[in-house]
Length: 140
Image (cartoon, rainbow, N blue to C red; front, side, top):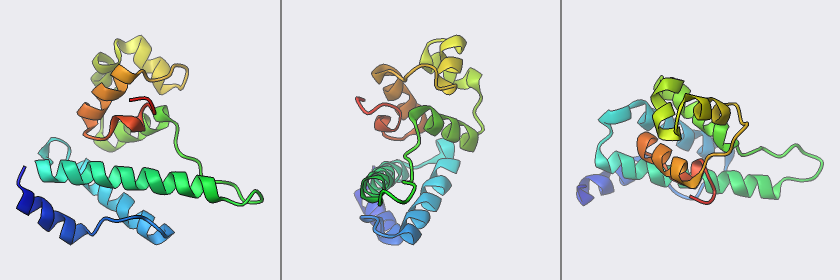
């Protein structure tokens, strides 16, 4: 990884603590554009994607923890929903992730929310999608 290129990427994208819904949307769009690159991500972009993923998670947790009781809290997606979204955005099918999850039967149960993602599976998915494993399992 080239530290200078990473620094330039940080200066260009200006990631930071997310404090407003507009900034949240901007960072989400940035994450989506990086994820669309798939295997073409440079190491500096992979590191940026991991950083902004953590920023989004922190914002989502703070929003969910600070909602008034009268309002519907913005829910953080369940790990299987996150997996579904990543698969959709990358054009990936069940057959592509089944080896990471054990077999097609386990993969289907996980995608349907009937089975939790294990720590090992979360690590494999994190490597595969180039995102933090904590998106799939809080214990990863």
